[in-house]
Length: 164
Image (cartoon, rainbow, N blue to C red; front, side, top):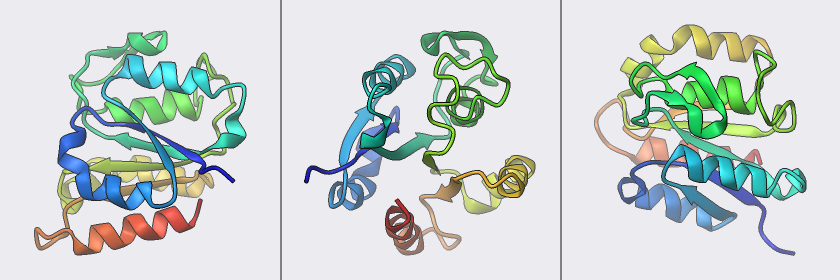
């Protein structure tokens, strides 16, 4: 049996070697460095979504909008909200305008950031709470532990992979 696929949107994959090592033990990774590559990868598997175990999305990706995903009216707050907008508007189809429609709505997503846990919990708190209340299959995770280390974060990534 071949490995299931994780489609990963990450503009700086060189900063995530340990995360990549962890994920490669169980999954085939399709790492996309920009929105165009991500859209192409998602489209490639749209006829076989059962092959995709889930998605990993970087929170911060420098882009003005989601034009490369055929959603030019969705802005990204100068890249600060790119991952969240891809999740909400493209994968979860929250507004009903995604070219993917509801195809990926039930797939699990790991929102991964190098922002401190304290910062992203405060900045994205309302979004995270709303998703949790709606039974969304999304986990938000900082790659940096509260003490600046990475051990706890790596354990959490391993735990997430077990849920797939």
